[in-house]
Amino acid sequence: MRTFAYSRADSVERAAHATTPTAAFVAGGTTLLDLVKLDVMQPSELVDINALPLKQVEWLDDGRLKVGALVTNTDLAHHPAVKQHYPLLSEALLAGASTQLRNMATTAGNVMQRTRCPYFRDPSAACNKRHPGSGCDARDGLNRMHAVLGGSEACIAVHPSDMCVAMAALGATLTLEGPDGEREVPFGEFHRLPGDTPHIEHDLADGELITAITLDAPLAPAGSHYLKLRDRASYEFALASCAAQVALDGDSIGTARLALGGVATKPWRCAEAEAALAGQPATLESFERAAEIALADAEPREHNAFKIPLARQAIVRALREAARLAGTTQEEQA
Ligand code: SF4
Image (tube, helix red, strand yellow):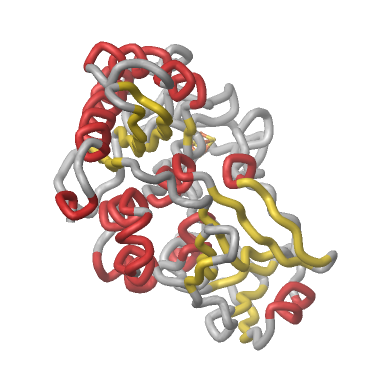
């Protein structure tokens, strides 16, 4: 049995200064405690941050919505400002996990959740993410659930979050607090591609913690849709998912925002596909072209080639629904 110290942080500043490189912050614990029990993570200390004042959701003067790091997934999904102005985020949150897990899981914890690659969670398997330089049993193993975008020779693990896919599409900024003070990181730059260092998953230094995530001002009027395709209807991770947001300009697409989940090593914003949609008619042909562009660089493995057409279909269906909703009033959508 491994032992670890446990402490409760009573201020953000003290939390940021109290940790060592082998300590871990714990809030909902829905990922961390599983991995400690599996002996995949071995923190020397758990710093409980649940008492920190990071549970507010508030509008900023510039029209953005600031979400405290400890707001639970349930509270965020049902918050009136999110339901009305960011329904895409609400849909994505409610597509994730189970009610019980959403009641415990926090916004920052969701951003920080680890991959569900079964080899990562098995200490007897070779895994560069868990043990750098040990190899990757997924490359020639059972890789049906693995990534077709953003992978490397070292790692092809999928980022598992639904919430993060919606945030990638909506645009957001993370606020981090650490020993050197506060700094902000654009959401799209926070998660890293695996490259040669799959054990480094994000732009968070030792001792830093996420204190808030601020969503970009809502794109309005717009329609949006989060479509998650999976092996069963609930409590399952995505095989492919798509967060789509569309603002119309007459019969054409004014602005489109698009991100993918279940197929990539990080929440995957499809910037080239978005650019290709701008100014085009909101038709099936435009959506299919965007889907081709979004998956153009996909690299299948032995068992997951099916994800490429599946993700294309997810994009087309999500865009169709988003465009349909963009053409209706907010009252009709409610
Ligand atoms: Fe580990 Fe990544 Fe390979 Fe999975 S895909 S075994 S997480 S290195």
